[in-house]
Image 1 (cartoon, rainbow, N blue to C red):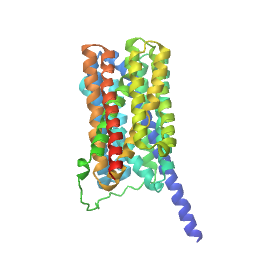
Image 2: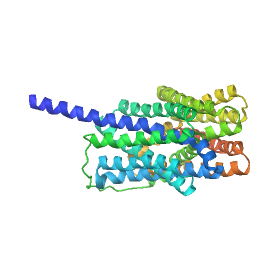
Image 3: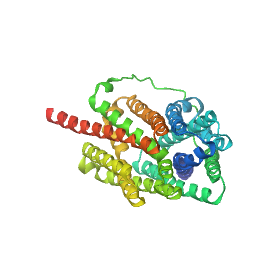
Length: 398
């Protein structure tokens, strides 16, 4: 009995070390995601990049993120989880260092692609590890994503510190994130995470019957337009505010942090109201609110109005992604390929929209590029309306 209790205690300690490494990785993932948008205006100015190239950099990041979603599921089968996480995290180390070394568009595209690889690897593998170790407890996973929001909230402040104190401070900020990524590799390397290759695969019969269901198709469209919107807002918002002259660059960085704080509060609100209101009501309300506040944001010309509209937009936008995933939970639980299908198709939105918005900005101005996002927001709202009435139709027919 004594030896058994000691073994249990040792197992608990080892699991805590692994979970601590996962939480640290998600904290850094928040920095990884937001630092790109924070340094992009300075990077574009330093290397004299057109808006279309800036949008292409964000798309390259999204491509890396998308590819990493598949790699994170495949690599552990052949090389174990620890090696897989360490390998994928190398992208962030190399990517942020590379963007400070050269202004060559090809190498910059590679840098943003590598950062996307790391971001997707951290998200997918750490979700799996924490879920397994906690027995699928939602509290552990919720805290994991809360840590991400903390990193995203702190990132613009870190960028402001470096850019205000150093010449070419954006390069110091990028190197700082590169070092944070290096510590992920060290922490997981020292952790007791299982590193045995998972070579035995389950023989499962895959089906794509869910593609025939209208609810799944509409939800996929909703998520596609959501990611069109989110990728442009996260990646080009600081550039828009800085280049339009509505607010100062430092104020714009603060707005980005405020956006993530509001998103965190919005997600908590949606979580509290989800059982009372239901998914379809939440989706239609949040999409309508996001569309309204985004239109007002594009029409705003003062610091106060921009701040108010951004808070409203972020608060409404916050719960759309998780609620949409919950809206198709019956398909993702029944069909092994459903989750990968919806995230892959929706992920194409985050790849294509920044390029299109950047091209429009080059031909008009940055306001024109960001105003184009209004189309995506309106189409997202249209999908929410279709989902609402489709669910009512199904309910009345049963």
